[in-house]
Each structure stands twice: as structure tokens, then as C-alpha cells.
Length: 112
Image 1 (tube, helix red, strand yellow):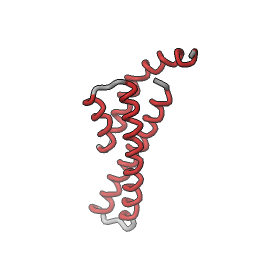
Image 2 (cartoon, helix red, strand yellow):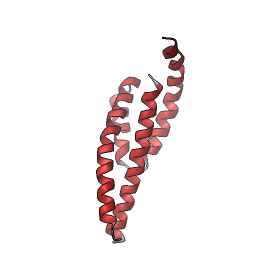
Image 3 (cartoon, one colour):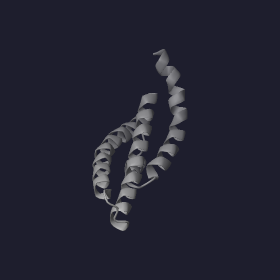
Image 4 (cartoon, helix red, strand yellow):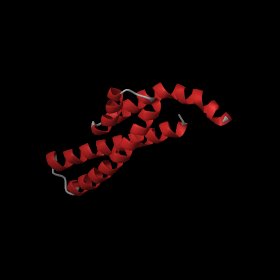
């Protein structure tokens, strides 16, 4: 597996996680605090999160298929972008797990 596969997953996990946290804060501002402008902020962040979550799904699925994960683990990673802060926790766990695998395969890719 190329290091770029893991890197692009990591970037999208952080982007998705940040947008989801912002979306939750926007919802709190809109519905609980009734802050002016929160509805527009929430709308923009919701649209951005929705589209970028699709990109996250593609990259996470690509990573899982190249890492040969079982279906349950794959679903766990795919759904991490729907639970606030879960994307950060799952990304860290997956990165530590796959870092050694990527490092072991990097010299073999460079020689080829």
C-alpha cells in the first residue's frame, strides 16, 4: 500500500471531523441559543460536510480494500464520519495500525 492512500484518508478524516464538530456547534447556536446568522452558517457547513463526507467514504473504502479489512471494520471506519469526534479517534487508531505496514512496504515500492 502506498503512503499516499493513508495520507489522503487521514486528511479527509480530519476535514470531515472538523466539519461535523462545526455543524454540531452551529446546530446548538441555531436551536438552543437562537443566534442570528447561525442558520446560514449551519446550512453552509452541512452542505460542505455532506459533499466531503462522500469523498471521505471513497478514500476510507479505498484504504480498507487495500488493507484487506473485514466488512465489520470497514463499516466502523466508514461510519466514523457521522459521529462527532469519532473520526479523530478512529483515524488515530487506524494510522498507528497501518503506519508499520506502510513503512515496511515503502522500501519495496521504491525499489520497484
